[in-house]
Image 1 (tube, rainbow, N blue to C red):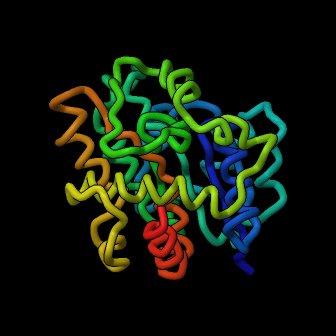
Image 2 (cartoon, one colour; image 1 turned 90 degrees about the vertical axis):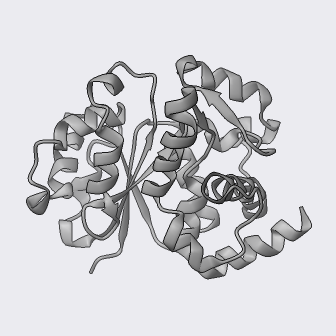
Length: 257
């Protein structure tokens, strides 16, 4: 019986710990995590020549798992393909990487390939990196892509102390919710030019897509300014997974913050 949520992460530490905390506070299904260990452009090299109609993500992940030399190597050996109910992939935008120039079509194509969690899997992008979840969002928080991995140090200096210490001092559900609400406002600003919590849950499914977010990043920030609007994907992941109940819960919280 299909019951396992499989999450594919770029890194072995931060993404894994965030997902483990979110599972503990929000989710009611078991999560298994497999670490790819490098960026989205390397993953794109593995799938770009595949016939999408015959792509079997589980088999690609098995190959990745066998190549890895970390403590999570044997994750997939515990399950058959039929037991995997949903697949989610969490990767950084990594626009500073050398391969981004070689594969400018990468993000667009990957979002097209991985657009459904019950089929090939659903891809979520952190702008600019996974550490975006720590970034205090006041309004239009932008970052210079050319600064690359310096973002990690930058955000660690400006973020609330409890986010720097979230691994050893876990946040509760309300803490996470308050931070993620601000990122939902930022998505609304990106898509609708309105920095406020979205007023309509139905609009989330229609317009707050990963493709729509990427296209707006490209047209408003990346191409004209070589910047990105800082966004974590974890907020929208939770809303899309848990649905209107969490959306309304956050709407009420947003009224008090």
